[in-house]
Length: 626
Image (tube, rainbow, N blue to C red; front, side, top):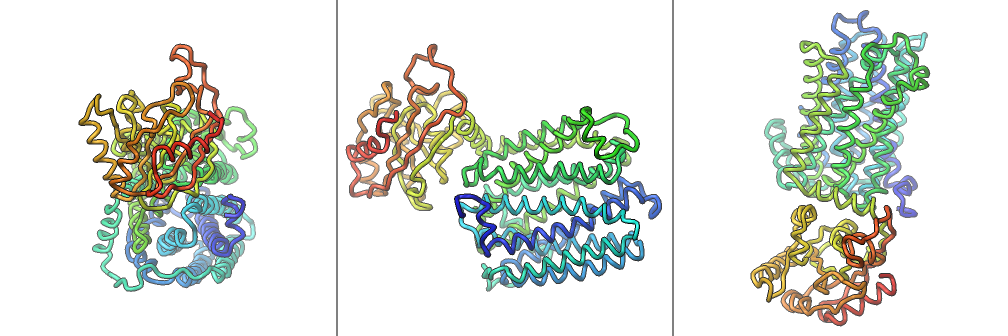
């Protein structure tokens, strides 16, 4: 990416036409959906006898129903056929759908307009596996987080624009058929024109035989997800987000009228806050994750979703202020909690969702990646249908209010988060590491390109503090299995992180020969699996800030399994809270965002590795920066 920024992708044809095509599609969906929502909420009594809250939730269910029914079928198409041609055909289908929408607007027919929602859901069902399946084909690994962030940002900005435009077009005096229909048709045609410039994306499974049995193919897609535990957990996390997010997003039109007492302008303003938050959180992901897939942001996002979801319940008024305008609502100091809550729910949602999507794309097998996305869409649809049913029950037979629904959703989110992070402690471990290297330290990394993308390699570093493995593991893009002194491994709290990160405790032969032998066995297993092994050849943390003599254990490992060794220098950590410069009771309070460095040298071939040579390279990299 030009200049090391995700925004450099906007200057490249491999990304920009696709970005505009999908953004315009989201824009068009939401012009229509929000125009219809405004019609149902503010004119529902004139068009149907149903409760307006139930009509809005029924519409949401109709839109997502095709995801549940047809994702498995079209996931196969995405893998089997060339993607740019499929996208062009999808955009032509969108034009046809908008012609049907024009008829529905003209006839003022709720039934036909809801059928158009079903068709738009079908179009999105076809496009979804292509949308997320094409990104790993057109982006490099280091661009994946930034590219996903831009796609999410573009999608939600388009949703925001459609959210504002839809109700406004619905309220123009000249009538629905002219303005809403003309806008939908114009946007669909523009999206088709952009799709013509999308470069070819070759099929990843051209020999795939299409299975037309939706049931058996759905089961097969779900099995693809279950092949990789990391992918499975990420998919479940994404689907839960859509349960939570859909609950909030779908209720905002009714919330603005029935709880706050506002009109369609206030509805647009509240949706804008929510969507601006998600866009902001998505774009911040690349910066906060260091252009790598950082799952530590996921617990951070989950915590924010719960806290601000709970606060939205307590901030909501018991009695609506009838006839309040959007300007009056925003300018009143009494409403700032609601404004901040909606903004931050969106922001933390961005932190939550972008790393998970990037992780699914990165870890899924390329030859059936789109079918994994199709399986994800099936689960998303199932969770969103469950959210709509739950909302209809709570707001209908249970007789509870929309703030009550927000409260229940926030509590459920906390329960689900605790369960997931207990089941998969890697997420929580990465969160703790991420917090360490983004609050206590500011880490500058040089030589990251020296780390190979794949294959076995040993990372050998000087040992300055108790948290050296966390800093190294947090900044190196590949998972690192560290060898560390068993007494440090057993430190409370840190032990959870080390154990979850599959660290290898080691002891001297005179201390515990069994621990030592087990450590060598596990080290060989890491290298045989083609993974990264992290070691501290000094054998202990420095007590004077200087590099201690490297022990010969590295030579024993290399003699049995010859792999390259990367020398690494940790700089400016001496004197920090976690070093041994001062006795524990005299250590100075640390400064937030202390500046430290991680310097990675060129790999030393296995034939040239010795403890003395490795120590010289680390000392050269460190220089005088202790």
